[in-house]
Image (cartoon, rainbow, N blue to C red; front, top):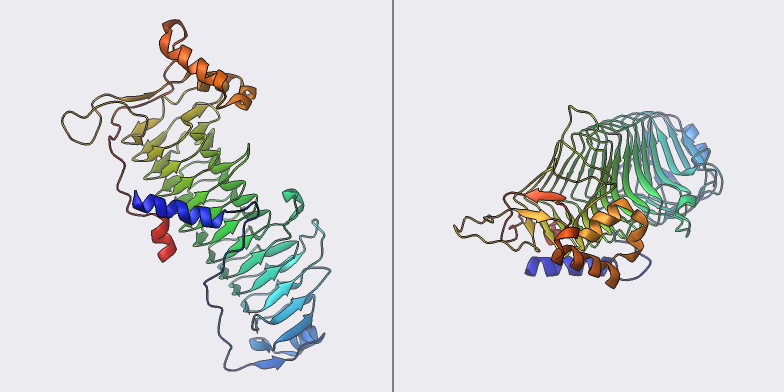
Length: 437
C-alpha cells in the first residue's frame, strides 16, 4: 500500500495542471572533445562544415549560430547547451551521411512545412549518434529516416504545444530505421513519438508527456519499450499492424478524455506486455482484433491497472490471448466488449480483482470459486456505444440493480477467471523503483 501511495504521488506531481510541465532530463550530455576545430558564433557554420575534412570534430562556442546547415560527410558537431543554432526555414540540421555525431547544443526553430517534414534534426545515414541536444519550437523534433544502428540518447524535445495536436509535428520519428537505440529522451508538447516501418529497435527510459501518442508503432516488428514514463498524453503506447513488440516496466498514467488509452493494440500479434503500471487512464488496455494472424498470441502479465473507467476494453471478441497475474483495482469496470462479444475465449487466470467476493478455504491464495464479470449496463453499452455518455449516471446504476435482482434481465457472463487471487500481487517493480534508477 505504501508503494502505491508513493507511485500515485509521482503521478500527481507529474500531472498537477492542465499543461504538463517539462521533465528535467538527468542525462549528462557528451563532454567537450579534447581535440577539435573551434567554430565561433555567427553565420559561418555551414562554411566550416564544408571546409572540414571527413572525420573532423567541430566544437561550437557559446552564442548564436545561423542555420539551416547540411552535413554530407562523416563529422562530429559538438557544442554546449548555450550554443544555439536557429533557423526559420528547412530542417535546422540535415544529416545525409554515415558516421555523423551531434551532441550537446541547442536547436531552436525550423521550417513549418509538413510535406517536407522540416524539423530540428533530419538525419539519413547509418551509425548516426544524436546525444544531449535540446530542440525547441521546431515543427518536428528529431527525425531519423532510413537509418541503421542510430543512437538517439539523452535529448530534450519541446514541441510547439499548439492546442490542435494534429498541427504539431512529431517529437521523435523513426522511419524505415532498424537496429537502433532511443533512450533517456524527454519529449513534451509534441504530437507523437513515431516508430513506423522500423524493426529491432529499443526504446528505453524515455519520458513523453503532454502529447498525443506517447509512442505509436505501425508496421514495425521486434521492438522493445521498457522503463519509460508516459504521463498526460492522449494515448500511452499504441501498436498497429506489428508483431513481436515487448513492453516492460513502463509507467503510463492519465491518458484522459474519450479517446484516452494506456496501451492499445490493433491487428498486432506476438505482443508481450509485462510489469507495466497503468494508472488513471480512461481505458487501461484496448484491444482491436489482436492478434490477427492465427499463428500469433498475446500475453499480458504482472501489470497493474487502476483508476480506469474500463481496465480492459475489447473492440470485439478476441482469441489466443492470456491475461494472467495482473492486478485490477479501483476501476469502473474490469471489462468492456464492443458489439455483442465477450472475452470467454481469452484466458484470464490468477488475476486480482478488488470486486471479487469469493473465499479461499484452503488458504492457497486462489479463490475457491471463479471470478465472473457480468454487468447489464456494460453489456448494453457494448451494443449501443452512445450510451457511454451516461456512464456513472444514476440511471445506469439502476440498470445494474435490475440486472442483479430480476432473473429475467440477468446479464450474461463476459469473462471468467477460474483462479482469481484473493490478495494483491507483490509487485517486484513499481514506478518508485523506476524513479530511483
